[in-house]
Amino acid sequence: MNSFLYEVMQDRMEVLDRLDLRIQWGNYDIRVLRFHLATFLPGKVVSYHKHEEFEFHYIPRGMGKVIIGEREFPLERGMLYLTGPGVVHYQEADSNEAMYELCLHVDIKERTEGNIGITDQWEIAEAHECVSKIREMPLEPAEDVYQAMPCFLEAFQASLDNYIGSYTTIKQAVIQILLRTVRAYDTGKVQPSLPSRDMNAIRYRLAMKYIRANHNRPLTLEDVAEKLNISSRQLQRIFKSQPDQRSFSIIVEDVRLEAVCRRLEDSGLSVESIAALEGFASGNYLHSVFRKRLGMTPSEYRNQTSLRNGGQLPNE
Image 1 (cartoon, rainbow, N blue to C red):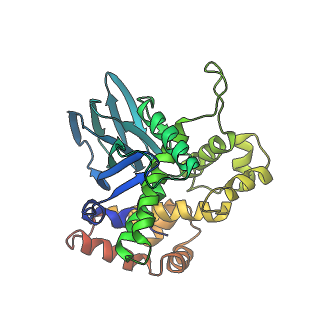
Image 2: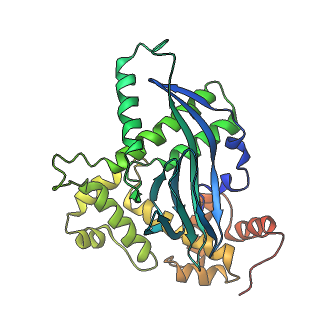
């Protein structure tokens, strides 16, 4: 586990941006213009602007706000939004916390040469439905309930590894981002006045919010299930149904370790103090878990972070 899964993309945005990605999907030609992780430092403002292409925005960490047209929306970890050609928008990071954004800029054009080489009618139909919904998508944020964000990391890693099939993997990742974005807005409702929600996705999100808010306290599966008014067995099934299939204990440990990593990066507190603040029984136990999960000690992690920041250790 890493304190921030997408950190590897932070200093190497050129890895995907430099690729000349042209994708034929159904009756469409898709040209990838930008494909990277952007960082908004605390209080950073990107004033009103627009693009000639579609831009898919995902927030893997941090918080802030976006103004689309004349409407303002709060942004937080796990959210996404789409801006299309000519859509004016404004972005701003929280004044106290950096905001990170996974960005995909694509040009989508209907193929002029017809259906040459395309024989799969299912692909043609799915591509048409997806692009049609992208062009009509609401100008407001949604939750990344279908896990489009990991597709960015998959494409990045495929580009680095450059194995046989990596180019196809990257193209498929782009298509998956488009499809999963559409799915995030497509609730499957029958009547506009009665939209339905994926209750398992909502419960998973609420459970994760509760765990993050209370990770430094004693937590049990039963505690969290009670807050959601469901059984502990049902909650465990919800956790296991997610793509990463983590158990409750691993999720809590992951959240605590993320908090520990932030403390190691941002403060000079002792490991013993950090353990007490972030829910670990002792400094020795944190040391053991940290080494097992990250392959290094907390001190080694702090030193590596210090080197990346120019050798400056955080103050207490």
